[in-house]
Length: 318
Image 1 (cartoon, rainbow, N blue to C red):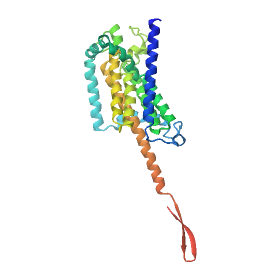
Image 2 (image 1 turned 135 degrees about the vertical axis):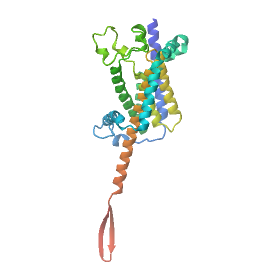
Image 3 (image 1 turned 60 degrees about the vertical axis):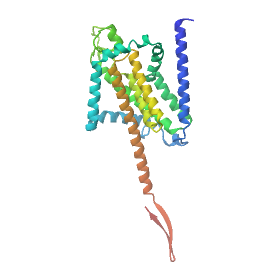
Image 4 (image 1 turned 120 degrees about the vertical axis):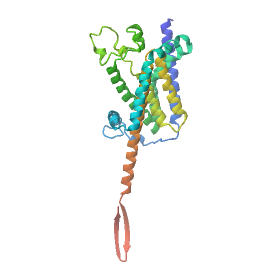
């Protein structure tokens, strides 16, 4: 048996084991006696294109709120934005030093060499499959909160993914592995907007070499983690595990020599912000629905039969 065949078999075994653990963990969540409803799929259709409960309308609403968010910022939000920009700038300044430490960890530690390629896919294929598995098992057990959480996580992944690709296209930053081979610029060269389509570029290399900033895997991991941490915040270990796994994904992007530290920080922040917005928008819609239902119930007419002497009749009270 060739070495490549052995590697493929090992990868498949690891994938099977991971998916098994995901399904088992999903089962544990879904048997929790919370928000389980046998009428959930009859009354709240995720396939609706008209109701705000539908997946597509909610997704467009998320994009709308994310686009308009900066125009609604108050002093606190602007201060936090300034702090985030400052931290990113500071990390850009020391990206090379951090990369020098990170890129040799797989050589120096066998456990890093074995685990890093697997952990990093929690922000890619494995992360997406985990959300699908959790949602599928929740649907089987008719666990409303589990289905909602998986849908919110997918919305957070989609929105963060769009912003990641837009920023990548405009920044055109060189990945660490590409920088090592080609330009050897400090912290990777920033080529600018749409460089991957520039036919006159002196250095000929794949378009993926220019999409370092921000880290898409880290953004995906943190968008999923934030949704799960927000939805299950009353269960202490879930936020801890969610953010710990997402942080490990960020570190793995460094040890895999795919991203700079500033890329990872920006991706984590983007995933966190989009995850929070998606959950907040969902909660706002839920409260709006409750308010509408309660207001309708308050004006429900009541019919009363009455007798006054020899007179009989009905009265209506609103």
